[in-house]
Length: 219
Ligand SMILES: Cc1cc2nc3c(=O)[nH]c(=O)nc-3n(C[C@H](O)[C@H](O)[C@H](O)COP(=O)(O)O)c2cc1C
Image (cartoon, rainbow, N blue to C red):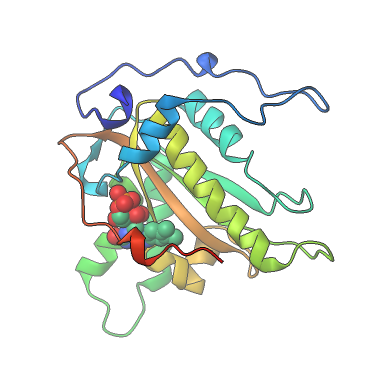
């Protein structure tokens, strides 16, 4: 819990502190009591993107986060997602690409174009999780899309466990085919989320939550 909620500056955890993934058919972990994991889930909170600043996960840490996120349940072993890392100058290049996609829209103003240009620059690093479903007799597209959503959450939780704050946003590029193309997505692909990562520069407070008592039943 210490790391997940902290907002002060921190030294990154070495990515090498993550255990190696099991090799094929090697014994894997089916269950492991972990009070720290439960505490992280019980108290997790997204951080507003405008509160995210350096340090962000270093490139090797982002690689490690992506490797962890790719361990999500995945019916048919299809890997129906991919991860596009936007660090450093790439954030500005991606923003420029989506700004170009909308700059000739009727009525578009300079403020909107500037916002598009700066979209990915709001946090020091981001990872776009792309839902990339494939033809399958086994796994319907719905399951493949859910797997991509799970990858978003795994990545965010893993980042918290590494001591970084973050949030999962889609925003307008997810719903604008021209922006998706500008970001390199194929027609059948969708943005499952952009996970913005960094360190919170202010404390993050709890928000109102859905009333779980009205959302649980037993069949
Ligand atoms: C698929 C998905 C897309 C989201 N997109 C946005 C978004 O575009 N803008 C936004 O303000 N919040 C968005 N959110 C919500 C935030 O990620 C966050 O969950 C919310 O602010 C509640 O905070 P919490 O995560 O601390 O409970 C999205 C959440 C999900 C699951």
